[in-house]
Image (tube, rainbow, N blue to C red; front, side, top):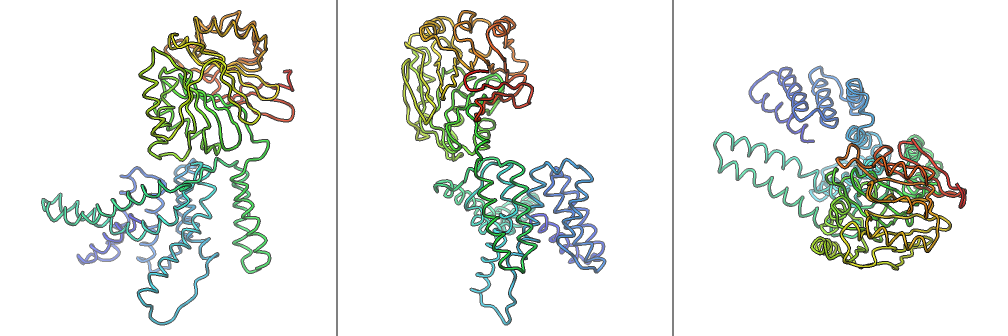
Length: 545
């Protein structure tokens, strides 16, 4: 829109200066293409620049302008320049919106010709209805794309567009003219002209903040499988194609609604039990309680900035998780809590619609100040704070988490790490945080008394050579071990000595450093643990590997 206003405005100015139309049109075309390059040659901007140029060319050569043909030409030219645009969200969203306006809206909403003059009220009503229809048409095309790329959709997006679209032109003109007056030294007049733009921007911000406070303003959908998106578009095409057969069309409308539900829903084989996230040099474990909620054990990194906002939260949204039932903080080192702090701050500012229900902490005299800072963030997020210690049990459905450590608060930070035993049916997993030294010795005594063997071990302290001793491994004999650490980390994790010990007492060794995200899925045959990159895979059949 802003490119059309700028290009059209330049064309009119040149015409007022008595420049021949062909020359004014050519200058406007070149200016808009150069402007697209100046702003980074983004797919959406270059698409608009090409379509604007085709429109001007049609006027110069006195030919008819076809909206969809112009969009098709822009698509071909951009793909010739870079075929990888097919994987670019801005490219797909931009052309998807064009298809919604040029193809879907005329097919779904046929315009009725009205004769005679219209009153002001009728004009406003028609403008409002056109906005609603256009919003629905664009939404129909972009729905799977928004879910696939952003894992959530705005419930009130169509309504917000009704505010933005009519005022965007005023905003742009006011801002541009005010800026030009300011550059020419006429600052008071420039400020006066720019006031309209400032008021409109303030209105956008106020509406945005108001929408944030409405429950369910954003619908966290999760990332649908690609085949679901294809099914949706095939049915949408059939609905548009068979538009004359009313009965048949109603049938396909029903299928279209089913496809929307399919995009949102999770199929039985798409469930996970555990995910060890790749957060670089740090830890984050997601325990999936159901398709829409989870527990987190730790969430931080010393090598990835913004790990909570740009890695953990997107992961949760991709799985359609709407509620974190509990976050367990094993200890307060940065590589375990930096992402948790970000998640709590985002929840407190309502920058995310994922709710955090409970924060589980353990007392530690050495890190009292850090614990208080976490508590403050949790309160602002409306999160309950619970202190746990050895013996605490949390049950959610078939999943049970039992705290095995710490037993006292006078231990050093790493030594006092929380350690958990997770069970789901016959499956057992052990999470050990960064436990070492005296804390690991006490945990070893507890595990030896229990005499249990474990299916999965989350290796302590990112594979440090001073933790996860040989006698410890001999007692639990894990079938698979997972090490969470960053590539080329300065600590040398995982250490060679630790890897040699693991090889003696475990079936498979997984590392986020080498294999990325590690996921454990449940099926009727048992459990399967595998790396995202597909390098390793291990199947537990019942209680045996």
